[in-house]
Image (cartoon, rainbow, N blue to C red; front, top):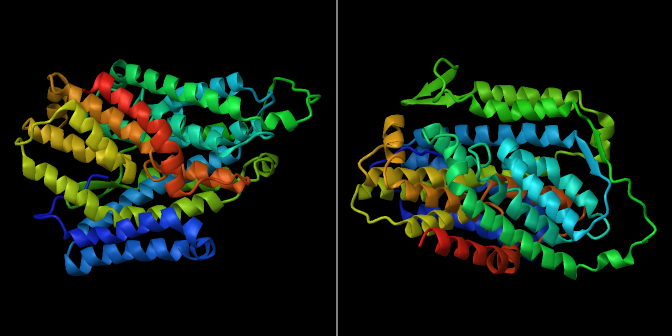
Length: 443
């Protein structure tokens, strides 16, 4: 989310609704589950509108809320087509649930995120992964899926994860990510899969299953036509009027707001659902609950985090070239903000700071290309890894995280709360790997 610069940052207390929303997302399902599940829509929308109206009425700023809502529409329209398209694909891998099978599945799914994106891969592969483990499915299966498929796996191409795609749109070469990020990617993937192996060995639920069960070792796919809609949804991401001249757009205060891409995605969502294979939908127990939950919560998140992101951006531009930046500082700072804010806008704001520090502009492709040939490119490497990897630290660090959580809960998996996800899984499992990556590559 690239925000407009105002003369000064908003008052610090305006961040309070964002903090409040995060705390309620973290504690609501545990401390007051009935109230939260009944009223979370009203809470999220209400807090979002409160911040939006403050900008419009008190700060007399209509531009930022309009841009934010346009970005939210782009975000949710892409998630919608990918969710519906994947929901109409029944993918069943009829193999026995073994540690090496799950490790191979997660590795291949993580690799494929670089072709269809973390969002597409998450919504496509989470259901077959749960089916493979239907006799021994535990919350840790879903957590490691989020770590690997929804985040870390997609760091080899700009298609893989939204922050890298933002960099590509600004002028970072397409193959730069693969050539420069493969080593941290491999280390993180190997570390996560190794830890996952030990979790698998402790999971003895399979001992209670009838060992006489037979497996065909075949892959069953119904609803193949939906692969077309899935490909269409991914392809439309490139229809950006800021990159491709001549595309229809809404000119708004010097920016080109996209609507053709979103119109195609939402129309495709309707047609995809209308003509989907009904048996595939039924087999997946498809409904709209998960996408609705994501839509309502992220409406509030997008609007509420405007002050936090704007403060970060104002700080970046105010510093000019006065900061002493290091790969370690960029890695940890971008990682921290990507954990609690959406990682795509964090990437853009920190990238703007890096370029500004080199007397260059993020809005100039020529400046970005000049930067790519300088020694400072190591800062971009740290930013790319930090933004992508740390997006897995919380449910809201990356859009697919919450989507996977919602889909898993639909099937009856008791997922950990926001806080438990962090303290039981992210901090003891993911953070040590992130520390190792930081020490080896960005010290």
